[in-house]
View 1 (tube, helix red, strand yellow):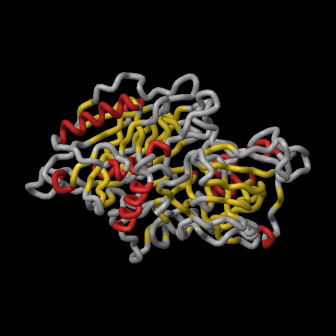
View 2 (spheres, one colour):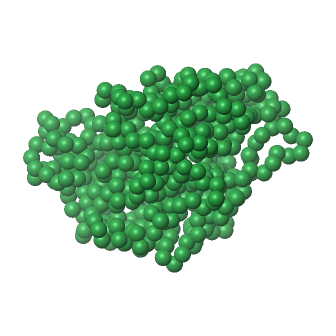
View 3 (cartoon, rainbow, N blue to C red):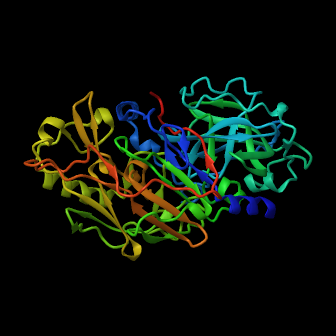
Length: 486
């Protein structure tokens, strides 16, 4: 482990996620992904889940916990100690960021969905007869052929890696350690297989002994997950990475794509960075919680009672961060206040948005004559995240509607800040320092002369993309933004 950490620390591991190949930390000219297909995919996602948008929210279970978000390891022989698997809600039916890397010796390229709410790494293996049948083309990469790797090792039930996943499920210490995951609280998205250990490689950086799930059966749209949560088997925990960051670029960004950074390069890139504490939840140790103190609309603090967003002693409540769920969910009482403020400021008759599963909608034609109010999130310690209109309003070209992408949380659940509200903000997770640092890398131009509408249709980065030194390894990979069930 020490050798692995030393190599990673020296290399200052950098993963660049962009619609094109990365060269010296900057997106290459040309081959820029058009923003329109992403908008269409997002629209398809909303239409698919319009009748059950609340079903995406992580369900509280296990006595008020918002879920352990770890899989259920079951005996490989399906013994009596096995089971149907543990439910894990994120990483299903949502907008996802997919990265490619290498596993095994010789290295084989595989892909996985980045998920900060998962503490497990798994991929499709060659023995999987049912894998990928429903997966979109963007995530249906070739499987990992385990038999071709000279460094792969099977994890046995007595191994600590198996016991970390879930204890006391194996019938014998020398049995292979099996696992079963159910994503989204139902059987539509499942993965099952065996735990294994092998080398992971990011360009020239190699990390030996990474524990991962080798899937032999899957159903649904997920072809693999790279868990970046706080659990023991997540990638950041196994490699003891004390800090990572990501930037989700807007569809219309003109000079920088999305990226994820680890270790020393995961640092602020502007002088505008602010921070707020990361809050620990003993009932859901894998998740990243923050303390949301309030919300502002047009610069005015909304009358949301103090403590509305607080994490409770039983593990309920609180505010979770996610990049696999596009919409944001707020405590129902707080949402009511936000909705009322928005509707009052806009002053137009709302349209029916049930087809998209969204609550506050207007026709694009009518909204073009109005002023959409600004919004900001206020966190503990006074850190403020100023939002662009695209962070909380979505325009659907097929229905002609523009809708607020914030919804009320299901009764009894907390709040969740989804990926759309984080677009354009560099999010730095200082795990060692127990704080979230964030900064805007986007600077929207002023609205056209004579226009009263606040919009951000075209954006330009106010800071350079992540630069690299000779000591930094740049990973050449592709960003794929996938909205499931297209």
